[in-house]
Length: 375
Image 1: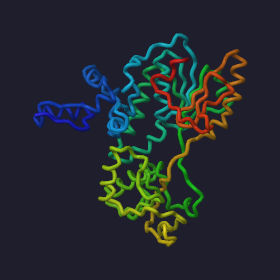
Image 2: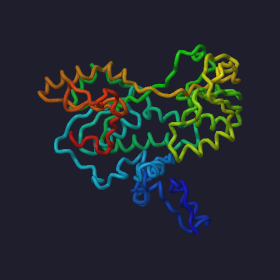
Image 3: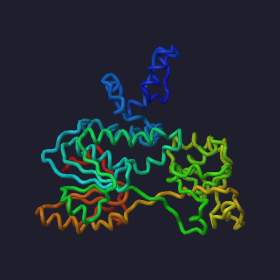
């Protein structure tokens, strides 16, 4: 008798076999996320296991492009390029701004390449947006991921400084050879009347303010984050309404995840698509549908889940190009700067932004493991 399916925990697998529930346990996605999982178990390094998030990225990518990709393992599907992280020929000083998952993994990779790495996080805890996942039981692996990345980074020799914001002056003072900007995103909160009210909770802050949530809730925004939050609240027994301006929910969910997500929405949530939010009141959200009819979607608590916006303003505040030129003059060389995310990438030339021919964002995301190949 064998069993398989979302088995991440060595303790759970041991219990299955020891109790006689099965003779064999199989792992599939867990070994895509961390091929060294069995070795780490036998070497008593279970805390270093990078757990599968059950996000279906591997399956969705297989369906779309006939290749494999993994959210937490950038080497999957790229093995022909080599799966070893080799030391860099020249050791450099690297400053990482931002202690979310992108910054932590970039710092970890740079340290594995024998660079001197300093990671700065302006808040008192690491994890970035993943901190918000701790309140949703079915997404707890995402919250745990930040702790795993932190452990791996520290073991690799990364110096971590919390309560430390990287400003233009700070970057100049550190005089690093490379700066990685991984400051993430912030919630999108449009200027809708009442959206700043006391009965409104930003979805990112739900884990901090969940005790304020009443039994009647309106989730404002039907993207992936809004849908998952609505499902969680429904599972807790709350009466949940979901308001979305578009005609479909969760277009940002992948093709494998979305059908399962929508089935859960049907169980727990009353959906209002094609409705534009006009005003937030103590009674709920005043909306307008496609027929220009106004309706009140009831709820004494409103969860704002209208999306995220990249913090490109932080890049401008750092005035990266100027810092880069000044540092280059001091070092008589070009200083590479890397922006983690979807919006820009600057490297090698201090006065040049890499974009598509039409001038728009090139959506350049470099493999985390290969980030320092040219350093």
